[in-house]
Amino acid sequence: MNTHAWILHLIALGLGLFGSASGLGQSTLPGPDEVGLALDTRDGGLLLEHDVELARWPLTVGFRVRLFSAAGYSIFVASETKASPAHWEIFSEGGRLTLYAPGMQPDHVRTGVDLSDGAWRAIQVAMTPERVRVAVDGEVVADEPVRRPAELAGLREGMAFGRLVEGGLGAAAAMDDVWIGRGSALESTGACGSTGRLVARFPFEDNGGGSLADMIVRERAVVWAERPQPVVEAQISPRFTPQADAADLDRIALLLAETVQRLGLTTPVEAAWRSRPALLAHWRTWSDPARVFLWNPQMHRPEGRVYDERSLFRSEDHDAIGTLLRRTRTLLEHRSALGGVESIPAGVAADLERLERADTVSRGQPWAVREGLYYAGCAVRRELMLSDPLLDFERLVCISRGTWAGTRWTCRGNGDDLGGHFATQHFGFITKPGGGLWLVSDWKRQP
Image 1 (cartoon, rainbow, N blue to C red):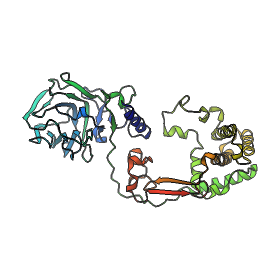
Image 2: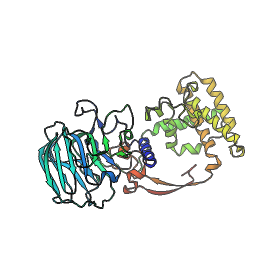
Image 3: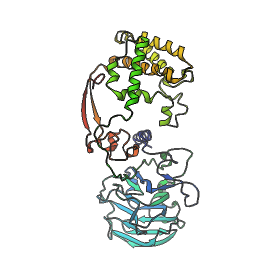
Image 4: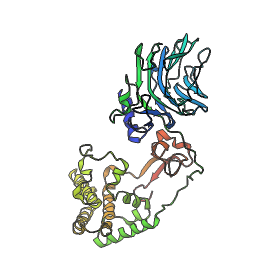
């Protein structure tokens, strides 16, 4: 895979846009040989980047398909959007296998073969500017003369399996063993072509946890298409929704104030948390070190994978308080070593020592007894972090989502594929009420 496509592949993995060979979009449905995996196109299909090798005729496309429903249209393979002069698609209507290419005369080659029996069928379509031939299970079922310009100026829009490139129509099917070859030869077995030149093949098999990139022949870049938008009965208001657990946040604010007073801490600024319950909610989220593993179950052994291993959770930390204070001590030592002592708020070092002593004395006691130390430590760490000279500015320019629950009108618990992740380049933030560009002043204290 070229460097640009590989970087996009890694970004998409990090955002959850697609999974491994055994993950999102693949079904454990038996393949045509009753073993292995297949692409369940009901999950949204597959998109390929534009590649001239996949666009020029003569071209032979082969795949195995199991149609679940004959109702309406099922798009098996499509090249570019319908707006492109070079568009073509292999589809079924009412279960009947057909090729459609608007730049070709006639623009349809119909086979009359009914795929709606629920069985796995091997399909091959050989396309040249003069002739189109279609084979099902090794038997030629259509052989039609056609006229199509040898070179059609397309829109460089790529190819899709199980859907149109532009979306809108998908397929109620499972697909397997998709292959694309240069030339017009048909195989008597319907298997992956050996005559002509193989351009790309997608077996959709479990390759031991490898990524989809491992399935690509000749560096063909591939990304998952997003799942169809679910229909919801009620829209979510873009207006701000107060915290549902305001009572617990009030309890934490009171506990924090009492701990600061009891230990004689001077660094924490009470106004910073009294007027910002979301800050307390964020601290509370990370009071359990296991929280990060709930987000990413595969982070079992992150040692050796981080820039500074002092940022990890350690068994000797005992709990979130130990981790927090150790990290804060590391940050203070780092700032001091850089010679920026004058920028460190007065009292931070003394406050940290008080917290460390209180942590040592109370270890072994229930969390309810020690909880105040955690939030007081968060407040001290916050003041230390925000005093960094690199953060010596008071205004931020940012982009907001259109709703508090996500970037789309979806169910309240939406995931990355529905806009739950704040990735505006994917989810069209400006199309929803309330989204836009904002200038935030005094972001450290009272935004």
